[in-house]
Amino acid sequence: MERIPILKMGEFLLVSIQVDMHDRLAMTLQEDLTTRIVSASARGVLIDISSLDTVDSFIGRMLGHVAAMSRILDAETVVVGMRPAVAITLVELGLSLPGIRTALNVEKGMELLRRARKENGRQFGEGPYVPAQD
Amino acid sequence: MPIRSDSDIVMIRQKTRVWATEQGFGLVDQTKIVTAASELARNALVYGGGGTVRLEALNDGMRKGLRLTFEDRGPGIPDIELAMKAGYSTGTGLGLGLSGAKRLCNEFDLHSTVGEGTQVTITRWK
Image (cartoon, rainbow over all chains, first blue to last red; front, side, top):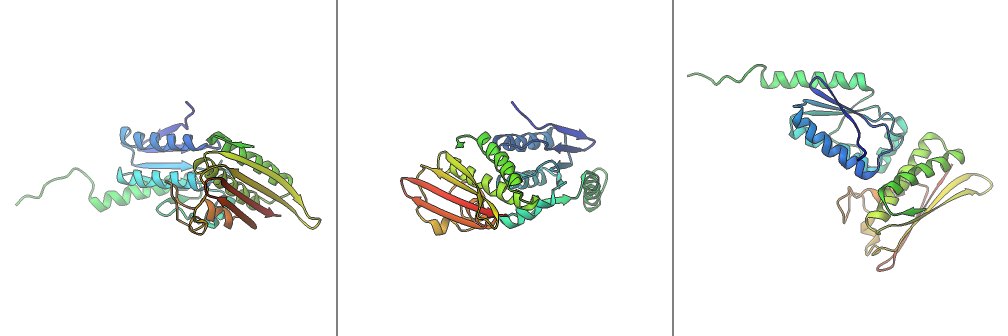
């Protein structure tokens, strides 16, 4: 079966969508990503859509689902490389992708993931959990 | 062109892109009509059980345009006003298909008869 490859880079997963996805392929990617977040203990997902010349409500919904599911699984999702014409069209379509972090390119996206990771670490305290003694 | 599977939706997107380019549409206008075509093709497939789309290149002397007519023989839409509301869906989608496609085009025309089917025509001028 046709699949979009998912690459693992440290604690992050990378996906670059290079083909015009049919709906089933988008659903497969969504399932594969969710499974891989758990099996790879990933803390972040970066999805590059710079090759996509169209993002309709179905793909938009898929991206939203991936972001929501990864959040529940303690991973951050960032969508990078959206073309300006796609951004204009999405907003006019009525889809502003709430809850999805975006960055201009892969480099900025990785930076965002690393920063989010650090902030989360600070928020919950680094190192192993030590119960309070009294 | 037939709309029978989700690979047909991909094909319609690609064909619409080629026609829009040939009509001299800019990148943003191309993307808008292709996205609208994608939404309506999926509607015809998911809600109409499949159908057809007809592409027409228009030229009224002053300007060029592209018209797409989607037809299905599905159950039809009982309440068009409700179906056109952004966010309303009888299925599992976001409910942006019809309302979104309308916003992405210059002209939008919808006819539906319950039990017979639905016809949606969209036009985008350059």
